Amino acid sequence: MAALPAAAAAAYQSIAKIGTASTAQSAIPATGQQGFGDFLSDAIKDSVSTMKTGEQMATQQVAGNANIVDVVNAVNSAELTLDTVVAVRDKVVQAYQSIMNMPI
Figure 1 (cartoon, rainbow, N blue to C red):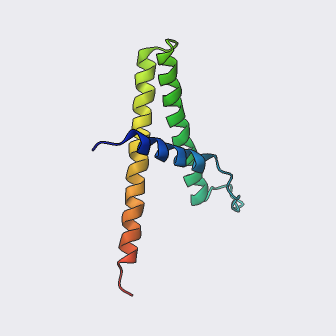
Figure 2 (figure 1 turned 180 degrees about the vertical axis):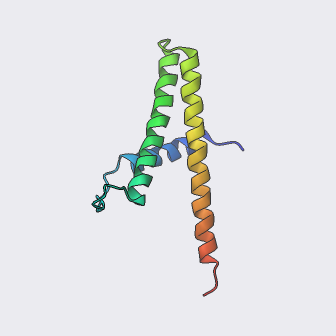
Figure 3 (figure 1 turned 90 degrees about the horizontal axis):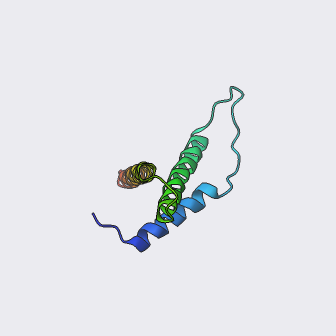
C-alpha cells in the first residue's frame, strides 16, 4: 500500500490539530478515574508526541547531530504509532458503517 507524501502530511497535520486543540473538561468522578474521552484525548496526544519525536530525530540525523540507532528506533516507533492510529480509525469507520446498516 503506497501512501502519497502530500496525503500523509495532510493526515499528520489534522491529527496534530486534534491533539493540540483545547477540549472541554468533562466531569471527573470523585474517585479520580478518567472517562473514555480523557483516555482518548491522552492517547491522541501521546501519538502526536511520538510522531513529533520521530520527525525531530530524523531532522537531527540529517544535520549530523544524532545517533543512527536512536533515529531508527524513533522512526520505527512513529511508524508503529501511525499504523495503530490508522487501524483504530478503520475500526471506528467499520463500526459506524455497521450501525448505519442495521435495520430499524
